[in-house]
Length: 417
Image (cartoon, rainbow, N blue to C red; front, side, top):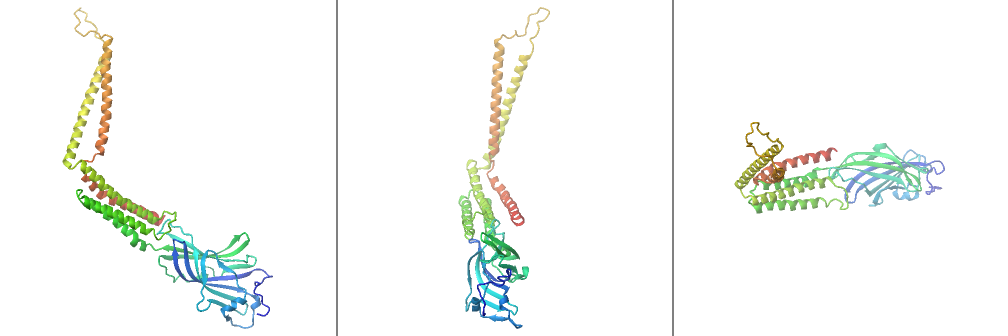
């Protein structure tokens, strides 16, 4: 170390020094959606050549880690790190190895919490891409150059890694430059893609919420006179679904503006359960106004008779109006040639046409009013439920069929789009 100055980088007067990097991922402890970060323990290995450390021999020298204070080392840092520390049990976990040609191997064991921006729109069917970025703090690209020692194979340990909720689908490395106001700095980026395991959420959320929807359909097979039973099923399922929705959101950030896939599904289930409760309210209301089917049937026959009677009235009025119109337009008959007395009615005086026109106009208005009344009664008859028990019969088919169709659309969209 005689004449060695650790404050000067290698080749300080002859171009930049190149530093090769490699990583070994020991573990990824936690991946937090609330804080949007992950915690990992890594072995960071750096290699560079320092011509001032060349020595004679054919074997490398493994030195005590505390001797790193006497050597120049790169000022590498983790860009998105929130909190990091170097392990120091029983001593600081550092390794220094010097080769005869002056190559230095410097290894560290670090645990770091790194930020990872996540898109939770498709949660829990989402895929996240996180990165680990390494940069030089003070040396720009004119002084130091970073490179991955073995390309994509520079990162190891992921094949044997097991995570609680995720599986690592792919990983790759890239090289770049960080541009700041003070200059351009070397940057190495490690990308890894995480796919969330959905089986846990299917058993924890999707299956219970679907079973609650099916439970709400049980009321369709219970008599409408059993008010406490049907109300109990409806209110219980609504409250249970509300509790399930609140529990599903506790593991996610409250200030997150994403509408997540699990929120959409829970909202769908809640709508079906609430709809089943409203269905009974409608059916019970119709039952109170028409307590039995016979009265509803008699009401229907009565409406039919009223309609036929109105049709007859309108037809009669229309015939009379047409007859009066033809009588008005027909020419007066000529007197006979034989001088016989005219038995036909005398020609109407000027006051008689007006008398004929008045009933015709009155009948025309009456016909229009009756036509409007017919339409109103028809619309009321269409909205009328002849048998309230038919509502439950229709619901037994429409609710399950609609739920199956909505599920097909939901899973197709979030799994394939």
